Image 1 (spheres, rainbow, N blue to C red):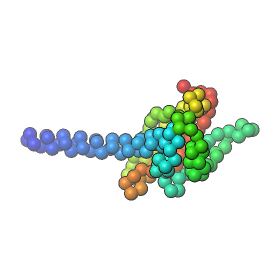
Image 2 (cartoon, rainbow, N blue to C red):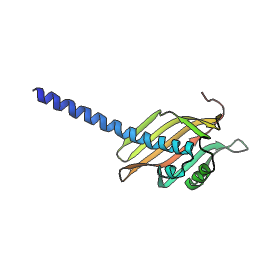
Image 3 (tube, rainbow, N blue to C red):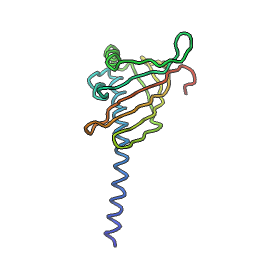
Image 4 (cartoon, rainbow, N blue to C red):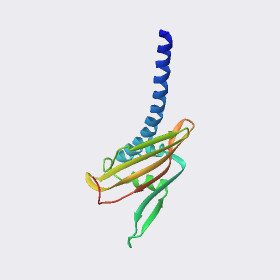
Length: 150
């Protein structure tokens, strides 16, 4: 009977660790992306993205109309390559992370600082896919605003 309880404890702890590990691995890819941005490390940044990644921002145009702007991932990588290491500092917190097999989502409110000065805040919504055992960012859409930031 003693061995039954030990086995049951090991199985329960193991299954909890696996589900936590999936969330942690999703968070790790997202954190790697922001570390790469801050360090202006485009090689590291590329490792975070799926080949067919979609990158979008919800913003307002000059007339105040809500629009969705598409950005090519390579254009984003090129922009990061021109920024001095340490200048782009996006500080996130993980509000929600969900995983179902090869699909994951993450909702990360953020504050963005450029050269140490607050620039804007918003939320990132990530969709990740697990390709060949590695999580990749497939889709990233964000909001940006200057008011209503904590």
